[in-house]
Length: 325
Image (cartoon, rainbow, N blue to C red):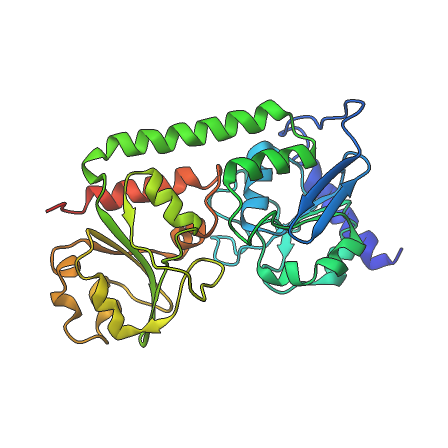
């Protein structure tokens, strides 16, 4: 083993020691292993309980943190306050652990971390593209179905099972999340059935998230809103479909518009300034259009039990500030 690897291992050992006492004890019961899990790239076989887990996907990291699973490597979230961590991952992971690039697959770094399990079920598609190389480093989990479409309940239970977390911990986490969503829907019952348009916007283009299977739209439905959707198309992994900016006028009659700038914009009016007449659209003129910041947008890419409370708190504030008529 090289000196470089030993140096990183020493750093991670020190950082990991800070986390050892916080999480649930790994399931080591006889008969629990080997585990075979089928997924979209084949099958993952775990011969024994993993001890060195690396999580490189949005929900993979968050669910592990929520279950108290110790990680030796995690996706780096560059938009975080510290440049490494998601806002909803608490306590924050040491920067030496939250160091794995989000989109670029660094096979050398991953090998250096010496994982015995790589969790990439909600990672960028580039990780799925490198599945064969990842699987040579360690048993690797990618999405079970289409990328970013595995239900958070199933994913929480699966990650907990693979990581050796107590089954009841995963069930409790899912139940608490389901209850929070139901409570939100009841609290905002006056919004039930009202349409919501969700999109990314640039100075020249409009990217409505209209794939009816998108996790964000599923969450909107569960809180009582009626997301604007479209039929089958060439959607990207978050469910969007690029269109000319002028087509944004088509959401003018929505009950609520959530607009995520690609670039900088301090207000809805500033974001829509390149589109003549946009401020006169009913959804804008009546104060029902809101900016979605980077953190909320990224949370909605892959809603999970760790970030759904964050999402609901943001939506609470948005709905409270939005006239329904």
